[in-house]
Image (cartoon, rainbow, N blue to C red):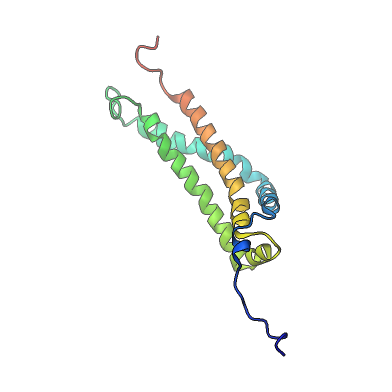
Length: 155
């Protein structure tokens, strides 16, 4: 009878700090990302460009032309970190949504129970969004360079 009753012993420390099979989780996340081909272009290029155009170019028309923000930067360079923050917030809120779905439908327990450590699971879930954020930052930076006026005394 003793062997029939299993006692929940919890998660062991070697399972928590394990990076086993994180590549499997990464492959699943990459496949899930590519499964939505229509959103790939929007997520990587369209959203960052539209954020910069609406918040940067649209609002910069109301900024005074003769005085630059903080005396050394123009308005587009000033809002660059904010645009990056908006993109990062959008991307990682999607990660939280996916983690919630995994937990709700029992996929998180299956993945961790199959030998993926908790840190490996988290690493696998965050690699694709981190790459998305890096690509978005590069796109925003390139558009910022194109739209920014040259510094005074450049020519």
